[in-house]
Amino acid sequence: MTRGQDTAIRSSRAARAFIYLALTLFALFYLLPLYVMGVNSVKPLAEITGGGMMSLPQVWTLEPWIKAWSTAQVGVQPTGLRPYFWNSISMVVPAVAISTVLGALNGYVLTKWRFRGDTILFGLMLFACFIPFQIVLIPMAAVLGTLGLSGTTAGLVLVHVVYGLGFTTLYFRNYYAVFPTELIRAAQIDGAGFFRIFWRILLPSSGPIAVVSVIWQFTNIWNDFLFGASFASGGGAPMTVALNNLVQSSTGVKEYNVHFAGAILAATPTLLVYIVAGRYFVRGLMAGSVKG
Image (cartoon, rainbow, N blue to C red; front, side):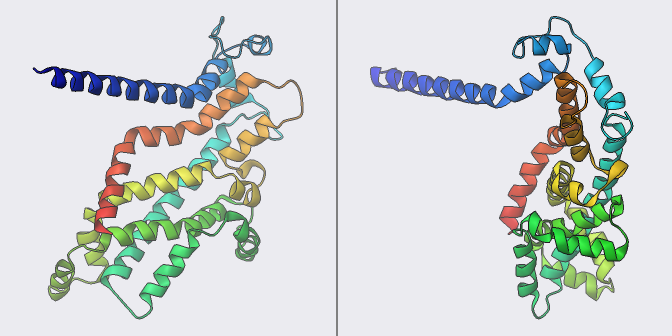
């Protein structure tokens, strides 16, 4: 090995070590809030108010978690976050399923069943992705009132389906754009109809982009606060609204350990979704970008 090669190897190792060190520092900085929440959620309140927020607990306790889940004062009754967690589940699951299926159907129609004005229609749906939440509050409230869905979980499902449909249509339309049209034509010659082609040919090949749609919709709907605060009421509120009510409660002592535990409980479902399906999310996005 020559001196020049040895110098190049050392420089490469030094550069790599610097990159890893920088990435480690960035990761620690990014994870610092999670560390603060985690360690303070298992401390007695006295340790937090005594100024030991950054230190590890001297006394470990799960009482804040139990209280945040089942006995904390969120609404009129001390129910904890548990009923609101199930409110969010009953809202998210149908909203994600419906918006994903409708987005797949829209993508199928806009790529394989072309019609006059389909490009304009897709452009309008794409434009809908950039409409701020605040603009649709009053029109959506009027629609929900007309349908008798104000303050209900079904109303929130409708809101999130309508608002998320532009995104899911975009994903599936790009994914189906270069799907072999010859397969569709051959199925039509064999007598397959619109829905048979969709269920038997397109949908089974849509796994990667369906994962992208599910993760995107699940994250946005679960973390939404504005629609939940605007269109839900009382015991029908989702998890994010209940967490805000818990933290903003003006009665009694501020139980920061309970608040931290509640915040982690509220964030856990989306965290689990990304841990379980995160690599499929990236894979689906790459597939969509290639096909689009």
